[in-house]
Amino acid sequence: MRVTHNKTLRNVIIFSLVALSCGWIGRLVDLQAGTDENGSLGQLIWIVSPLLAVVIMRSWMGDGWKDFGIKPRIRGNTLLYAFSFLFFPLMTAVIVAIGLGLGWTDMFSSSSSYLAAIGMALIPSFIKNVFEEFAWRGHMAPKLFSLGYNRFLVHIAVGLVWGAWHFPYLFLFVDTTESMITYIPRMMIGVIVMAILYGEILLMTRSVWPAVVMHTMGNAFIDTLILKKFILVHEEFSYVAMPSPEGILAIALTGLAGLWIFKRRKRTTPR
Image (cartoon, rainbow, N blue to C red; front, side):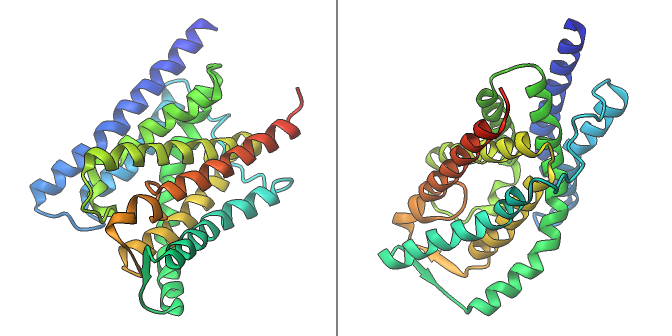
């Protein structure tokens, strides 16, 4: 038993080191190639490497595939799938409505062009999030859970590695003049809160697919809204009213959702 514990912990550490280094390697590749464009070879290395490490560890380093969460398990979990599909669109609508009502946010272009842009973003976002979610929710989270650690400590650990994995390419997804000294800690809190929400749904469904769905909808709705300039949040209110993970309103609503899932799981899980 002790040997299995040590092997699992060793592999989690190896996975974390791969995740924390692959983006910087990809960034170096892009700098050598003289490109920072979306879809670069470096970004491919960044996205693919964590899941490739998972395949190696589960196939040849003793981790196995039993807890990988690849079965959809839709039966009995339709409410959670619906929640995963709707949460980020509804959260985005609430935050934007508050921002517009208080004069913190300006909206540009039409709703039809925004919906068309979302439609264009869904498939690329889905493909990207299959790689991302099966690395963190498919591998790192269940392996840490299997070691018997407190589950909130597991959520925090997953969130820290997952958040730091974004650092090398953060500039592609962030449109802010705020200092990174204040931005990054708030962003990391937002990612940890999402790790709690995604992780609790994983524990309830024993499937990674709800997280893939939720992450896809979040990227499609939120990233499109911000990066395509459908809204402009006034700089002095961006730390509150951005619907992305670093926004205080987004952190609060995601945290409340995670608490609801946690309490629901406590009620439905036998002692």
